[in-house]
Length: 235
Image (cartoon, rainbow, N blue to C red):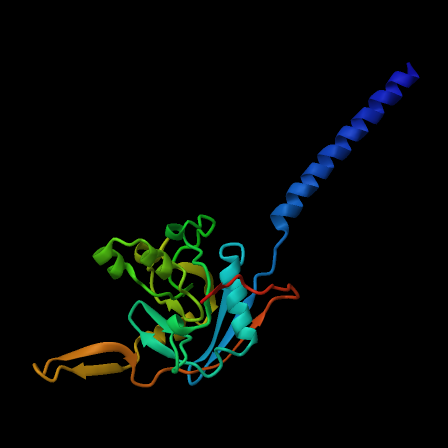
């Protein structure tokens, strides 16, 4: 009789231990927070913008962005394109992204990458790329689409309003502004170059700023996590 009581008590204790372990595991997973990389961008005459990156959504794009930041690539570059809906930067004067030594694969849905569900809401950072869809429509050659999808490198844009309808699934979103959104919106309102048609005399406002905002510096805190070199498509 005592033996049966002992075995029953032992079984109950084991059951309670298993339940406690499962509850702890569930709680641990729910409360564990992986530190996302935080980018600090100092824009001359405007201030500080901080961006949180999401490597779980676009791992290779994040690795490439971190690599370029750590190399000082963006320091001294400008936001060369300004629209009501977004600002774009990261272009060197002597070359655009089509002339770089490598590009990276586009991590977005139409390019066959399904894991990235980040939406282009206000304050989202995305990787700029070339658009060769016009050549596809004229020729029917789908290789133009693939080339465009995989042409991103260094140029990036930040949305100042919700652009999800136009960009979701077609461009790689890889982070969001967590501080300084007011600065992004301020830049969208700066004066842009006005061009005049010599024949008609008509004027047209462009997306090129009269005084392009300068990125004084860009740094990234990875909280001790090491990010490997990105996978590259060499030219």
